[in-house]
Length: 337
Image (cartoon, rainbow, N blue to C red):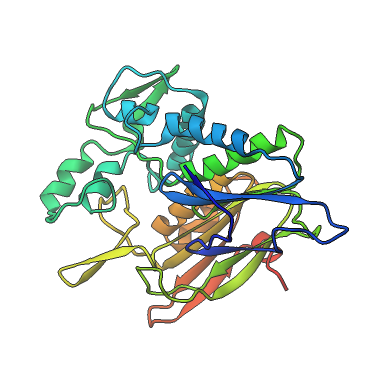
């Protein structure tokens, strides 16, 4: 694990705020930053106590449960059909993912890992993707084909594998926030790979401020980021953004988006270029942001209405190279004037 000081910019959004050292009369805030899970984290919380070891403990526990890159993790064991017992972290993520899968009619599905790999966005890169290959993979993709029985994952087909990348970083942000809250910290902002868990207020005693980037066709992320708007966050909750405008690859002259539709088995490019979601927890925001990218703008409001406290902003393509923004009323109230 690497740790350092400095501001971390993340694709899709920027965490805004004051310098790391507060003004004379303002309470001290501590900042922890570094690299974890093949991405970066940025944590700011009220008080001068060093909670880095507690944060590391959260990361270690999360890694053991849900990091697919760790061959000894629970999810890696599940994917290899080993006789592993799940822990509370795994079960919490699995149940939330299955709930969102059911509400979305299968448009969100953590069993789509083989499809992600087939299209070159996972652990493997396939040079040739045929309709026959996709049809054969779909035989062992589907959230209804896997379930929890007690502490054990039961699959209808042993080839089923799980990919929680669209929900797990959000959950990790929640876990760090919960660890800080357990030690009496009521004001914090935790960002891991662009997924933000927040509570209370920033060092100026004002809402936390997050900048949502304008869509740019920049797969390398080298273009200067411009803000579409600034979101102000107070109270307790989570925020996540998902977007296709930087995540794609080109094969035979055709651009493939990184969002896979589990129902069709193919990459999908709806009218949604970017989805930003605010929810009571970052895990839910993370998964719903991905869901909204898959279903397109017409279904977003109905899905969001199934969850308490969920608001959203969509950046939509107009089809002629321009774009527009659509947001829920609750999200509109959070936009900085």
